[in-house]
Length: 190
Image 1 (cartoon, rainbow, N blue to C red):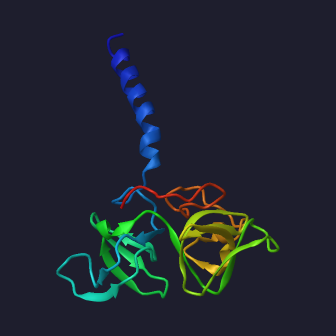
Image 2 (cartoon, rainbow, N blue to C red):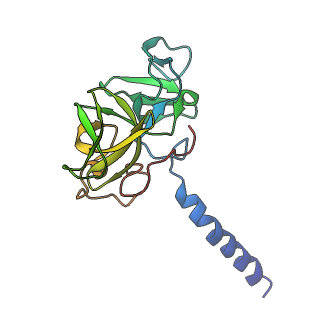
Image 3 (cartoon, rainbow, N blue to C red):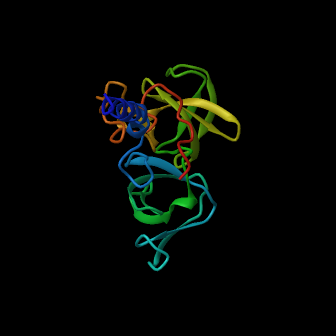
């Protein structure tokens, strides 16, 4: 009888902590890899490796630029930029707030429909904040102007966001962050 009470207490403790443990991923940050992030500052150095001792290979001069984290250490993230270049950046220069870069000129529409009212126009290469994606469209914001753009014309979104018919993986650590119909807000701070 004395052995049963401690075993029941241990089982209850394990059951209570299991959901919290399941929410984190087996990465240094606890966040999925790959995932999209953005540059926090106007000028950021991209390095050849994960330390200040590695040479600078790129200087990025665009706050908000979308980047894809493809690997990470405790303090460093290997990121891919919209041009396909990969460099290492310290986690403190990255933000979990997602942005996208337009692959082509686009109009921002009032609703996620091809013939909806045009709210604004944007040039190729423009960087806008990603609010959410739904049914192959993404709601974007820049300078207080908002609108919907087809997800296929954006760099910084994953297949389930571009094509709602894409299969969604079950493992949350292997999925595209923000995939689906929910809001795409800032994830945990880098």
